[in-house]
Image 1 (cartoon, helix red, strand yellow):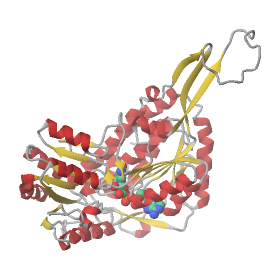
Image 2 (image 1 turned 180 degrees about the vertical axis):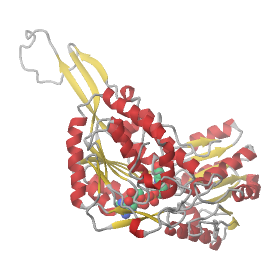
Image 3 (image 1 turned 180 degrees about the horizontal axis):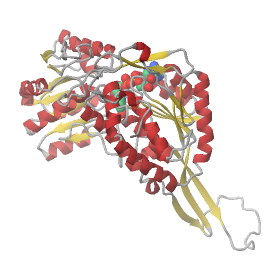
Image 4 (image 1 turned 90 degrees about the vertical axis):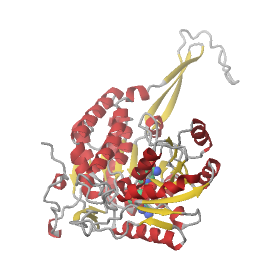
Length: 520
Ligand code: NAD
């Protein structure tokens, strides 16, 4: 039986297991292959969002410890880059096996720290696992190029690792998003410093243990915890060459600007407002089910949640049926098998979501389903909000302008597909969108005229699998190198070109050449 540093949180029917503050464990840093207690005197409380039980303390890692993580990563990177691509590929193969073996225990940890349902948490691990599987194709992806460019002269290009890179993660996918980052970074020959979300670091801790078992050497993967100070250290430390960030606009803009100012490569995936367009020729039942699932699944805490519905023409009359489907979703604790919608991550998030629902009402929208005030038996202190549906929403309302990040669907009405496209293209975000239709020409028009990076046609959450990349656009991304896929690997590597000349004899060299070579 594999044990993890967080095994104590494995699901038990006796949940909640941790009730006494005195017994609450601290989350360790992971530096140079060791789980070590921080010497900090600043700790962040970690709560189970379904119960409000205090389940851990996350350190604000000290500057000395952050430096230690960087030094160890830099030393490890020098050796790790010398290993062959095939050797690193083999480590990825073992890692994917170990993650599959431990998928359930990682998912259980996610339920307890993040709140999503167990089935959804398994999906969180699985969608990250797919990136590891893609990293197993490293040998093909890292293949270089070579061309004879003149007599006896060849140019070839291959990609080299950057050295030390860093990953800063959000709370909403505690396994998938770290797995967007560290496997490709390591496979490409870098060392990495991961900074998981301080709200749910457990999955990353478990993944680090598995990575070590898979053969990732000490120092190649490190974890430091904390919040703003820790992030600012990562932005400023010269040894860290690149930062992968996923999270809110505010933090992302800060990290992108500060990291760039310090000469770093930064990829930053930010917030979203994803619109679905519902056309009257769509399959009604399938579309309404897809929309309800994508709007309220994971309690709306997905960057690709379908948070906005644009009803074209008579489809606005379908909304009472949509509300009925949403009403049937069960709000509750994530480990209970029939739960559809878990809690929000914090008490503050719950209050914010409830306030945004009220703002819609105050500004004239119709609240045809109100999930506020829902009480889950046995979990009365949880941060639950039930599915909520605001209709007749206008684009100037706060509930439309803000990313709500809760189980709230805002619905707008238009008369034509052209109007729907214009409305979506006028929104600053460009993460994802979907159209529901049975018309090929309408789908094709939508696909080509919509200015959003990830488009679904009768697919509500069109997140590409890892042979492709995650291609949010406009306000949903800063930087131009996407996560995972070829672009992800390019982010963690830099190209080197070599031009070589090997002549058999010295006799052609009669005088110095001063003009630009014309490559005969
Ligand atoms: P967040 O920005 O609050 O936190 C993300 C990370 O940034 C954390 O590690 C946190 O410690 C750090 N951080 C937070 N505030 C900071 C500050 N002021 N200065 C420096 N660092 C700071 O995001 P979150 O609430 O954890 O995640 C939800 C957000 O992430 C949503 O906006 C969601 O759309 C977005 N998200 C986007 C994608 C995507 O691919 N586009 C994917 C997942 C989540």
